[in-house]
Length: 354
Ligand code: SAH
Image 1 (cartoon, rainbow, N blue to C red):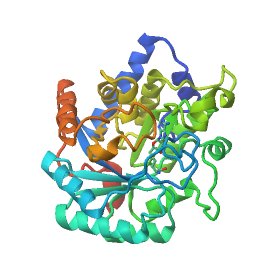
Image 2: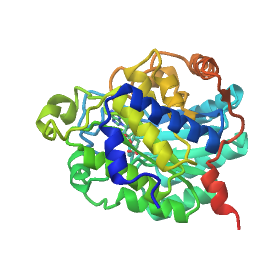
Image 3: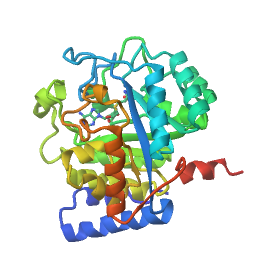
């Protein structure tokens, strides 16, 4: 049984009365505390390649954006970041990249094995749409988790923002199901306010989180990138005004809070995109309205600005050291503690129990 009905979800999504919304924030916060506690776990993000063969109309590193200087980190550079994660006390590293043909199956396997052997950290992969054989190989090599946002549960909208690639025929929702059968901790997520996303779409996204029984859910506002089709011409793709979801900070909190109610045991990051639209307190408010994870950036400073999926990304000019300190202070300022160890989703633990 779904914790909230579609009607209840829709009515919260459209709620504008701040007093009533206090009820949503406090329910989400209480559910977070009861299911995943007061610890906030840190996942060190390593953006190890910005090459991409895809043409996602929202994303600044899409193949069609010729103006981006492309980089691919060496294995040693990635390992150096993983060692920094250990130094900062993070329990997990996330390896993220564009869909880069230069990042072969074998390279990821080697990286995963080396990171495990040298650091013992939990490893999350976020390298796009991949074949079952690749996922199997990486799981066997020691990868623990995989992140692949389905972005929207509306297949027509998805097809519009994420054109197919010749020779590639992988459904994201199918891949999430495969990841589950391979015993990964499975993460997905969405952007809030994609031009063309309606209230019904967003309610369906939240229902799908529950149906997929996700272990991790990333939710951030859509931030237009001027060098992308959706950034240049977003208005042309919008749904009629009474149906279009706004890409606001406020909407993002509602979706985060509702995701917590729909998936009480999931790990939910207070995302960098949220921090980008409210640098002063986006992270904190996300953590107080359902989230329990932060993803400090570990990407070396010379590459950071080049992984520009959207503009003015929070923390682009900070060093890894600064991110570690800043996030720790933010977590402690709201009376929460920094979690130690891998910080698995209780969902995954329950699933493994005989
Ligand atoms: N190539 C990988 C990693 C993509 S970056 C993959 O596709 O899975 C991770 C996430 O950033 C994407 O899934 C998307 O939800 C988000 N993102 C990309 N462009 C964005 C934008 N303009 N605004 C907000 N979020 C964006």
